Length: 512
Image 1 (cartoon, rainbow, N blue to C red):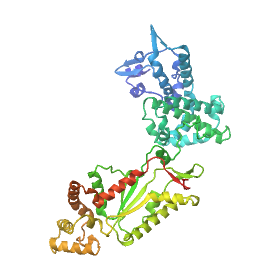
Image 2: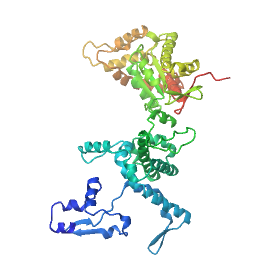
Image 3: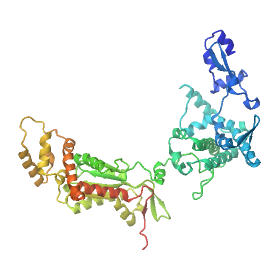
Image 4: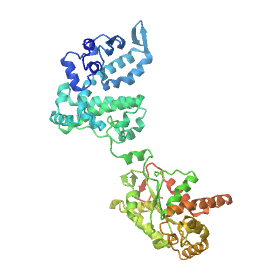
């Protein structure tokens, strides 16, 4: 027919030549016109023999249509290919009869799953993958009405099987997936990933995912039957031993818990809170100088903006442990890596004395304790939580960051270089005297800076000066006496003290 239409140069012949009926409408039309055939009922014909050309149009006299579920046999075929031999043009498998017989029976069994899976796909595949693709937007209303009207047991009755067949078939598929999956140990992480990423896997990992998706289709239908009281509920996992359905792709929706099992987390090991914009800008530069990783999952730097800022909300959200009881309520097991908290500020205001700093630390610890259920607020838990919160200052004499690291002349010179005023601009000696008076009364350096000058610009100006000081201190072997280096050392020690994996908080004091 295509050749005849091509010779007549009929419109639409190019579309017909490339037609592949892969959607439901086209398949029904092809079947009604007697153009749909089962290749298993026909002799094998190579693709080359099917190629045709008429009036400049290339086409095939017959096209093979495949189901993605036929790919469930890829792993088995790959295992068999090295053993394929030929007697003339007849292939055979050169292994013992038991193995070849099992392979053949298994391929036949997998082929028999194509129809049930294709029948379940329209309803359950979008639920497994999380996306639904339809030819047109208007088709969704039609699809939704069809899905709502579909009787629960229609697929089971059409296939002529009982409910247990879906459960048992899924269990077998999961068993095969477990046996070939190179990512089996990573399955808890894989199942929490975006399903679109599953389809990017290759080799045996992809074959295993295909089997798990197929199993999920069967189990999704079985669970629907169970909810409709047409089947018994699936057995619960025993917990200690792996059950036959523990290899499912059904996510637990507990990403933090799963990441913690693998020592992964987007949550920082330490939140380092600094008071001003200058130190907030200089700390990352210092970390880069020493080759310290700067990602937020390690040490995250936050600006407090003032000594007396209330950080309770930040503490409650970021630091409060996420836990669950374990081991007969002897301890709490973290379900995400613990984040620790180090506040570094000037020794002024509510942080002036050691007692005041300890009081502020106790308030934050108490805020964390209150996030735990009352029965878990034990003395042992309180002692453990104390290791999550720390406070520090640049110098005990109350010096601010700038005054703790730089001289009056260095500060005055930097401010003078940034001062863009053309009138009433103070000289460097006058600025030095002004800076000295502010230092003496423990004032704010901002009072010396002209209106509109930012602390960020000042940090840019001061960094080369501070870096030169660090170079000199390094040559003298006194680098770690520099306050910011000492604080960074402490931050690294705190950040690395606890593992990224699971950590426990004891509820009772261990016996000596």
